[in-house]
Length: 360
Image (tube, rainbow, N blue to C red; front, side):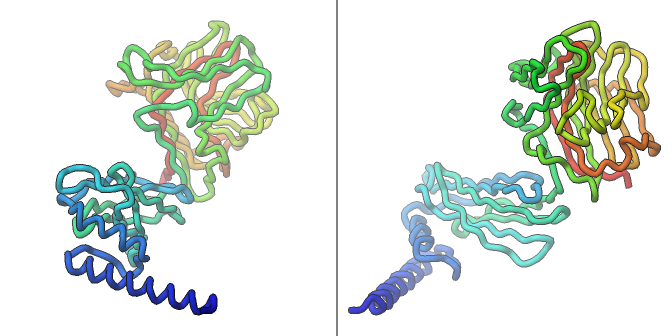
């Protein structure tokens, strides 16, 4: 028989097997779909031996980010409450902005099936539902953001990238098991540098290392911060928005910052002259090694900043303005960062949230 003949014969045999599998699944009430290949049909046949025990638990993020895969997960359990065999099939159905559903297959591993999906457009709303055989899993809506970063329960140094000036500056970035005595046993990240005035360190969420495009949105930057210092001769720490992460000076280009300083706290900025200038600060130094929530909102023409006690909500600083210095007005791209500079420099932080925002 020729090669072409062998191919036709093999395809005919596979079609017979595929039809037989469909008939078997139909006979026992096992769900399948017209797009299933022969291997998927065979995996569905596991439900003959390991029937499911009801609606399966699912887990989904509440939001997604353009271009970054989001995983949908569903638990795979049999009637005996044991994991279904690896490779068992779960079905996921995704619709975008109420459009037609996209059918995706997830294969179980260690009792959980996972299915990745890559959102395409900011502002989209994804509706996701899952099925395991004929048992419905979770239905949920997921908002797609232009960008987003949020710490989980565990804060990891791997999630952040250090940028410093000069490159010879000694900067230490470590994970600490206990954020501080007020924050119980939650972990955090500590950044510190050695004594040196013309030095600065910025630590940026790695996922945002290409910058945040603000041409269509503003930004909200929030974190729990513990101000510290390594020299009482002068120090500064807090959160900031850099206009460039390519540093040619310790106060390079445009920087908008919400910081803690000796004897004061509030908003400062620097422009191309590299000079630190106050926008608005108030007297009264934040308690060293305390825990405060820093919130900074910016959309190019408007800024708002709040510093409050992380737990009881006592407000230590609040300011907003729609009149910004020209040096930091209409920044089109920013790099959200935690900062330390001046003679000393030390900070701890956790619970980072960076998300789109608008003053409208």
